[in-house]
Picture 1 (spheres, helix red, strand yellow):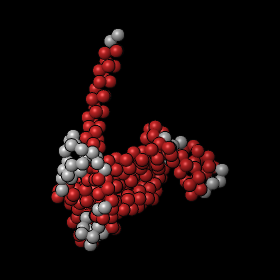
Picture 2 (cartoon, one colour):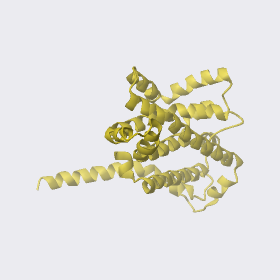
Picture 3 (cartoon, rainbow, N blue to C red):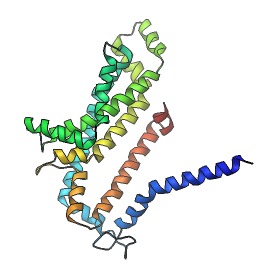
Picture 4 (cartoon, one colour):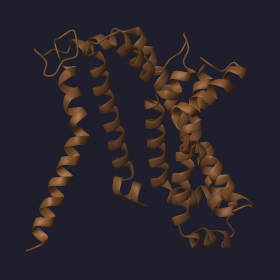
Amino acid sequence: MEDRPISLTLRIVAGIMLLFLLAPVLIVVPISFSADTYMAFPPSGWSVKWYVAIFQDPKMINAFWVSLALAVLTTVLSLAIGLPAAYVLVRLRPRGSEAMASFFTAPLLLPSIVLGLALLVVFATFGLLGTFQGFLAAHLVITLPYAVRVLSTALSTLPRAVEEAATTLGAPPLSVFFRVTLPMMRNAIVATSALAFLVSFDEVVLSLFMSGPRISTLPVEMYHHVENEADPMVAAISVLLIVLTFAVVVVVDRTAGLSRTFVK
């Protein structure tokens, strides 16, 4: 009998926490369909004009394509660099591997504002500010630690006996890696891709330091729009970004399964 009050209390607390997390979404969605010229909750009327306004704003459209291209390339490079790095750190374990692992994950320990200021100083020296290459390098700084961490954890849980059996049967190291190791890491690769894509697409602090008059990302344009305007168009963009995030989660679930991807 004593377990029932405890269970009920936990459910109530969990429900309150869930409501707290969903509260911004529950407010943003109605505002995005507002007929008002300013953000107000609840709206005085309903309209989809702010969704139409998004596609009529060339700055927002261009910024979206920049963010999309940047997120895709960042994801590809994070996997291309993170996979070999994780394999070296976990399987080969060279001298100083722990220090190397700490080096890869160090950017996660720094506040974004500090990291952005440091990159601003360095990139200004090489003329990378306001360039696509500068954005790409900056985003790699924050996505690589996640990629190396997730892939290293997944690789450390894989049974080495399978790889050793393939080697014993005469398979060369590259064949073992591509035909044995990579298929077993499928779930981790999917999780890393989704995480790197979302982190890059949604990054705003570093992008503010890297942006210039010729190139900008969608989060930066949203930030500048909020500074100058108070209309619900930003709320409409936010809803579309929520839909994009949900779509990525659905792809991950359909591809590898959420429970298998993030538990293993």
